[in-house]
Image (cartoon, rainbow, N blue to C red; front, side, top):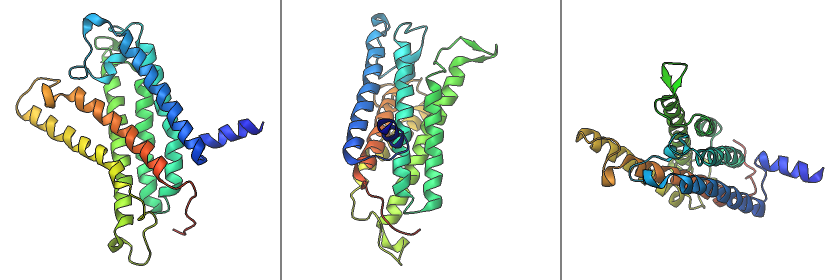
Amino acid sequence: MMEDRRNFSIFLGNFQTIQLRKYILITFMITVSFLGISWILYPKELNYSIMTDTISYLGDFVKNPIGWIFFSISFIIASISFIPLIIYLHKRIIKISNTGTWIGTIFLAIGILGIFLTAFLPDVYGTDFFEDVSLGKIHNIAALIGIFGLILGLFDYGILFFIDYWTIFHKNRKGIYAYLSVFPIFLPFTLIGIGTLITQIIRTKLGGEWPGAGILSFPLWEWMLVISFFITIYGLALRLPQKIPDIEN
């Protein structure tokens, strides 16, 4: 009974430092392992490459008839495992701004939902969904919701830390987390996000065909963007103090 309560408490974002580290390590390894198995099982003759194929191609049950299920499991685990971490972050960042944090958290929740749905909506072109809407198109919508939800949520959190750091935005008190170096955590996410935007604009302007060649490859930037989500969420969770600051909003 005590163990059940402890596990439920963790799902509500109540981590001790050691628990948090173990949770991140275990859930990350499980997520990567299932995704790796999906990649290994992808037919060799189709030559899967991050330069030409999006992550979602691994979930195509036509092209990847055995490995697609492992892709779906990976995304289900990744999305669900993010929930306690976002709750953990929310309880601490809300000390900076109540409204601002809720905005970011809602965006992140929408993003997590989008990622979760991609596991059940494979990227399969030519498979009709309610006759006139392909399953692939529905998948793309869910994926876009997931990606932009996470981008907007993390961007919001980043702005809050920026405001907290510079006293010009809060002259009547000290920054709550100004002593923490969180900006390096947001650096990969920021650079990759900007890089994705710039390269895809250039590819479009040049009339380049999808998915783009070399540095303009969309799948390449998509892979890096997904990795940056993990880096930012895990990094913030590990960097913020386990004890929530006792400060009135």
